[in-house]
Image (cartoon, rainbow, N blue to C red):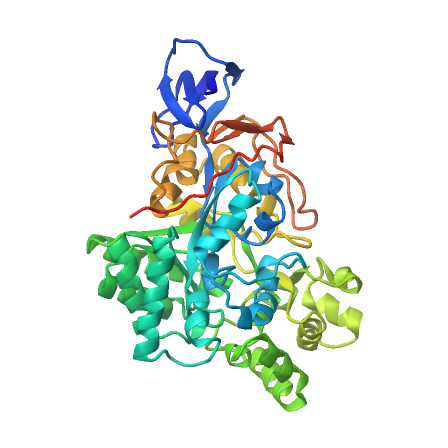
Length: 531
C-alpha cells in the first residue's frame, strides 16, 4: 500500500466553497484525509508550493473513443488536468458495431473519431469495448455512454424510417444490456444518421428506461440553428413523458442571428426545472465547433449510410440536388454553410497525404485551390476521402458564450476531435475557463469555475466516486497555478499544450509532473455505472 501526502495546498474541494490551506493524504487510489495538518507516516510527500489543489477535471463530452484503443495517454487532455473522459457521444461511437456494418460505420464517423488499420470496428457492446480500453492500460479514467445510433444500427441497420413496435422493444432490450454492462447513460445525435430517423416517441421509450436506471439522456439536439426552439420543445416533450435527466451536449445557438433565442431557451429550461425535472448541459469555451464535414450535406442524402451517400454524390443529377439544397437560404435543416458562412467552414482532418494541403483552409480557399466553387469542393473532398473529413465551423460570439457559461446548469467539456489540425479546444478548453474567463474576465470566482470542471460534471454523469476532494473518493487530483494557468492553442496553431498545470494524479499515481507525462503510468480505471 502506497501512502502519499500533499502538503502546502490551497484546497478547492470541488463543492464550490471558499478554499483553505491544508493537506491531503491518500492510500493507493483512495483519499484518506483532507485537513489543515495531517499526522502519520507516509511513503511519499509532495509539496504543492501553495498552489491550487482540486479534484481532477471531468470531460463530459470526449471523442477519444478510438484513440484510447491505440494510445494509453491522451496527452492533450492530461496536460489540461483532465483525469476522466466520457466517451460514446453524439449517438455514434465504437460499440455496439455488428460485423456487417463495420465498413459503413468507420467511414460514417471517421470524420469524428479518425481511423486506424489496427482497429477492426467490430464490437459486441459496451462491455467488450470497455475491456479493450482497460487492456490498453489507459492513463486516465474512461466512462461510456451507450450511443443511440449504435443501438438503432444493431436492430434495424441504417434505414431511414421509424422503428416498428417490435424493433422498439428490441432497442429497449439492447439499451438495458448496455446499461447493465456499466454504460453511464445514453447519448444521441439527432442530426447524425441513423439517430436523425428516430421519432420523438422512440426517444421517449428509450428515455423511460434511462429514468428507471437514473442515468442521463445526453443529446446533440435535432437543431441548433434557426429552429432550435422547435428542437428544445421536442426535448421538453421527451423529458415530461419519460422523467429522464436531460443533459444537452455543447449547448449553443448556431448562427449569430439566432443568438437572441438563448433567452427563450433559458426560460424553457427554467420551466422544466420548476416542474421538478433535472436539466444540465456542457459547453466548450469557444465560438466555433468541430464535427464531420459531411454534416454540411443535407440529411436525406445520408439515408442508407456512407456507401449510399457516396453513390448519390457521384450521380450528376442527385449531386445537383444536394448543391441546390445547400445553397438554398432559410433551410429547415441545420445547414452549416448557410449559418457559419463558407468562409467559416474550415477543414481540420483528412486521411490522404495529398489532401493535407487543405488542412486549416476554409472551403472557399479549398475551392480556389481545386478550381471549383466551394460546394463542389466539399463534395469532391468527401468523395476523395470516402467521407472521412473533419471540419471546424465558426458560428458564435463572446456575449452568447459567456451568458451560457454563467448558467447554473453548465459544466465544461472539450468535444475535442483529435486528428489532423484540430480545434484548439483539444488542448486548451479547461485552462481557458480558468485563465481567460475566470482570472482575466472575472466571469465567476475560481471556486465556482472549479466546481464546473469537477463536481458538477460528476453529478451530471452520475459518477459518484470522483469530482470532490473528500475521504473515500478516488485520488484524482490536479495542482495548478491560478496566476498563470491559461490555454495557448490557437486555430492557426492548435497543437500547443496549456500552461500552469503542475501536477496531475490519476487514482493516486502521478501522471503529469511539470509538463512531463508518464505514458506508462497505467493509472486509469474504467468507470462503470452501478444500479
